View 1: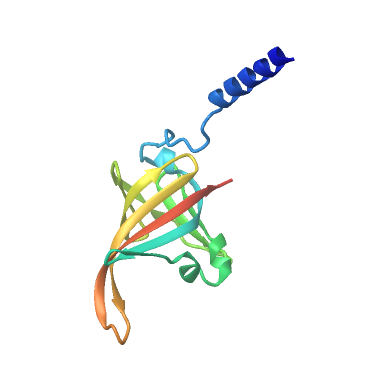
View 2 (view 1 turned 90 degrees about the horizontal axis):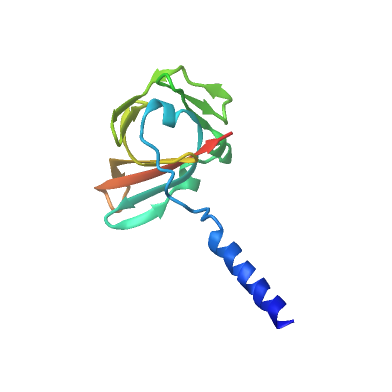
Length: 150
């Protein structure tokens, strides 16, 4: 009986040790028009200003129907935006891979923090002005996660 238990424990240990890590970060892709091609939906939006971070996803993608809008990048360098609230698609515009980590589209330059087979994470800096009573302008860093859609 002990031999069976020992054998079962050994087999269980081997199976666990051989299991692939599903959170592997080894699928980072090179930024180019072929690797970025696909449909993406915003799934996270975060801003940091004066050393304080804020999750702004729910406030930016409001009403809730905006959470289902789609950003499409084609392998031949075109970008469109499908507005899920108004059920309209933008006129195709050109996007450009400027360098190994810089993407230019929709009239703005973005720093590509990561590109995997399932996500595109981009960042950009912008000034934000706080309303009264603060009445001040801060440099803010934004991070937007776009998740690839089927």
